[in-house]
Image (cartoon, rainbow, N blue to C red):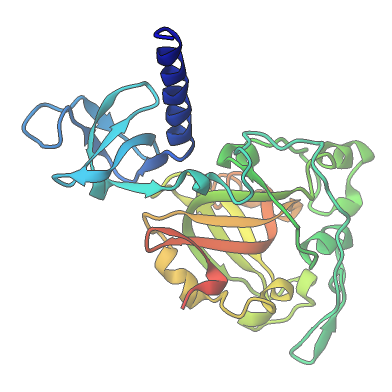
Amino acid sequence: MSRKVPLVLAGVLVWIFSALSAFAQTAVVQRNANLRPNPSASQAPIRLLHPPEKLNVLDPTPQNRYLHVRTAANEEGWVRKANVRVEAASESDTTGGQVSDSISPDWDKPEPTSTDFTAEGITCGPTGDGGDFITNARKDRTDVPTNYHPVSFQAIAGLAYPIAKKSRLRWSQDQLSQIAPFEGAAVTLTAFLDSVKVEGPERCNCHMKHGPDVDWHMWVTAHQGEFKNDAIVVETTPRIRQGHPRWTTTALKPFVQSQNEVRISGWLMFDPEHREQLGKFRNTLWEIHPITKIEVFKDGGWMDLDATP
């Protein structure tokens, strides 16, 4: 009997530890910060932490404005709470799955569906008014995924593609086959929003001119403060935005070059038209286009942009 009680107690302790670990919190380093041996600046730091390093929060209650944390290298210490952003364990993605470092060819890739879009006295069909109608059909899609695959920044930035003409109508079958296993997957990307630009007339939007009727380019980066040449382009389209009246440049402005990340969800798409922008205004021709969901980090938690005041 005396031997069984400790075994039972040990089992209970293991269960408690596992449960606590499952609900552990993560802190994301927002700016360079010292990891210290105690909750003060009285001793030399253990080392310097850099964004976007992630830390396990050992105690969510600050002491002297410091949080007790452990690094991925198993270093235990204290960091100023003002230098990190604490997120709940469930915050790692929008679907409950693990963030993937690659795009799987096995993920569902439904064929695009779209409807006509009418504005400025023009009715624009699902492939625009000419040019590369294959790419336009993907830009103009209006179907919304039922779930998304959370992916890392590098999963998109590092995805290969062929060196090919600006129009898919001039691609070889081999070139088309290189992107087919990946294009059209529904993904979610958490990143920093660098800027938003209302674009001008394009064939996919039948050369409409007004801000509500054109695509908006948004540049997102893996780390705060990076430049556009390191960015992935993600785009909202007028066909999708008409169902999201709160998706405005005004609503997005507080999150541009902010210390808080945004979550962008939508269809993975390859845009062959902008090769001249590589290394200047983007680091890949892969985009999330169109965006079907925007979430922002506000008041200590994630919020759908549709729900913001």
